[in-house]
Length: 342
Image 1 (cartoon, rainbow, N blue to C red):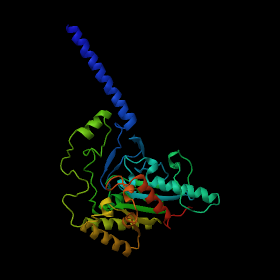
Image 2: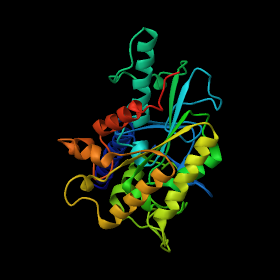
Image 3: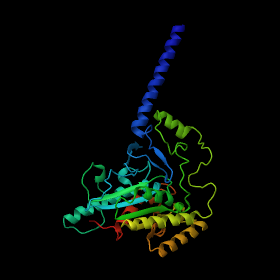
Image 4: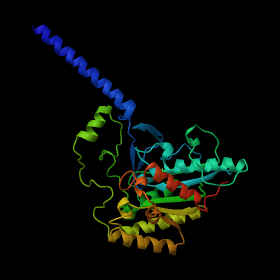
């Protein structure tokens, strides 16, 4: 009788272990759990994606190069025949786990420009391009267009300025700073969330099952300040500090012979009712005046999206863009006069 119970227990244990192994393999192969993107602390930038990593999350490819960009590997020195555009931004530019590498704004823009280059060589005229497979993901083929994507979740202008000070502009002819409304209120760069917030891990979990458990089943507890957006103590004028950082990004770009372009996407609630809140309207007015005084090429997508019949199609949630939204942004950058093929 005792032996029968032992056999039953062993069978149950074997079945449970087997199911856990199968579940572990499925979570890794189908969803990408167990291999999250890793973040590293930086005393000036606050944090950035660890260089040279590659993963798939929910079927979407995410590749980070040696300079912590969501881009292919690049040479610091730009080839003379290459148009190089550097996009700086937060999760809107980065695309995060919900956006495949080929559907990021930078990849879509590169695709459009590469296709236009082919048409020019064939004697065609510049026109809007239809998406084609992104050559930057096909190995180290020689290109005449490189669109670099230096971004990370919840970065603000001061993070992006610190990144430029650390790495430079990579000899880009055009530097595009892509903001959203919330970025005008972004806090001073901090390393607080790295290794403490589940969305900013600093090491790989031992098992995919452990990542699922810690990410979705454990309560979200972060000692001290949980937010990386709300500063503590509060700044008197975060908008002013971020405008100053934007001005410094412009100066660095121009010093390195790059055209500077500023774009801003709205929160979804700003497009219709209730519209921007009073403090957002005030910040927007300050930004408009700032860009005029500094003669910055600036495009606010709020009126652009307001003129669209179905602006909801441009959004994944209240702030992040869908593939259609990314396409709209990339097409707009492509249409700017400062973006010229070599």
